[in-house]
Length: 218
Length: 226
Image (tube, rainbow over all chains, first blue to last red; front, side, top):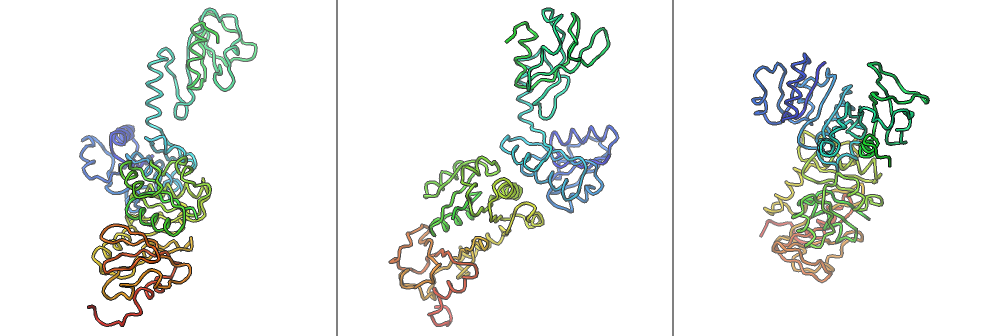
């Protein structure tokens, strides 16, 4: 895979280093030539200097053969514009960008761009660590709006149907592990002591799920 | 007409002032709070915050706006604002300034831009104006909106010198929008008398520059400068 990373700050550099270490071809782009010096000595990828809005700069970075482009500059607007150019002008198959300001989210949505919302993700994560430490997610979907969470079944729920956890739009039981074997629960599946259950839960419903697991039905 | 001016820098301020004086509604969206306060103090309608957010464009009247001028100093912002204005609000006419000419290739219909103006040319205009080297300058061409802004300087060669606004008998549709005298804006009433050094902002129709220039200059014999 050839990846073009526009914006070689902390995140851009870390991503470039990781992809390079994993054997991908990488070109990091930054408007500041001194960004190159911050890349570690062992970095085997390329570096291009210039604005990510300029066609010659993007072409020098190999955008025409790129499998992925990641826009990680410090400007949300710039990331949106670069991501859209990559997708619509250069037809790069995988395009991801970063947004810091939630005010830019509607534009990215309007244009159908896949963006990571750094502040939203940080706040959600910290909030979870503060309030739902016992429910550390196995996986987060999108920008953390939905989570995959696993938890042991509390004793008081043994004998109840797995579907008793389901709350439309908030919580869905997707899997039950019993005695080392995993199964997808059907309408007739009842929970047993010692089961571990996987839930997909909306981030706003984590408190409710915790109440269920803690023995307080609401 | 209702016009949204995204970016309250020098260009945005002038465009808004001229359009406002000509009887339009002009709302500026300015991200910098101090600058926004300054513009408000000058009697302009200002909303503070980034124009890249749909809710702010909506607050500025994007749902019924006739024209949007994206003239922040940041090209990527101007593109984002233009594409939002077109796709989300379907504003009929969108004009954007380009700061870096290398980015001009992006300013097209795919970003919702109907007309792109080089910010450098706007800057040149200001420089010419500051040095008094040009007499009548097209400040902004809002051709798609059926408007053009022209600036003319009153010099010793101007026929308009010593005359009032009413004396000029400007063509219908042309209007003196603002007069800057000694660095301050003075009311362009019909009985205002032009003096050497005045900078006059005139709203006209596209291509009206020459007509305006003639109204201010042509009745003077074209001899050398005094």
